[in-house]
Length: 285
Image: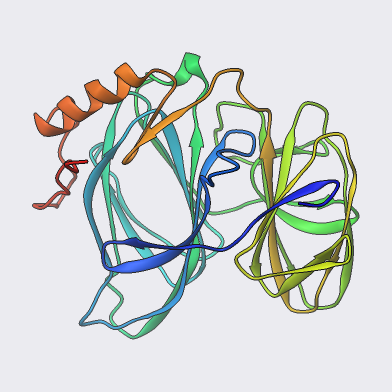
């Protein structure tokens, strides 16, 4: 750790049929603002006869965000939604008191799949809200730190993403063909981080490559040198006053909510995912 940032190194995690790079949660850093889970999948080559399938599974107490760089995926959920997400679009699924969904590829030709799958914890007043789903296909462009970004979620510099968030946060996506200097300003009350989705950045004379996340210290402006051909995300938000608990796909401020969710899933009280016959069992751990 340097004087003003914490490094979260890339780590591989198995998720059924494939592996991902998981940055959050990290042993020494559980959250950045409300962001509690950060997976970078791919790039991976998907063959038509070997699709990627994530069977129906439940969530509570969070919103999931899917954002693709390449390829496409089919989303289905227990609210009856079924649609395909493509690069530059957002699937925003708010679990609240409970929802189930599946994800799969079904491309007729070989394709490359790469993207982000994130969890954003809900504030206590929204943890048990009714589940909801939103698909957004047009996102605004904004300037941050003197450079252009796509605003995936939240608000910054007077602009707001159409993604319907439930707490103060920001998520930006930036692609840089040329070497770039980015000044990451402070935002009052926010924790901020940077993820290197591709290429590399230099912070405090240290080079950080693809798959690395940097959590910036609050109230300290950071200067980032972005290497040519890099892709980065800026993430952050206002932290919650109380901690969050995670078990499997469940997030809650109160462990009793997780115990109830276990029973609800075992007893089939979270609804059926449209056009899905199989679902993931509750883990034994």
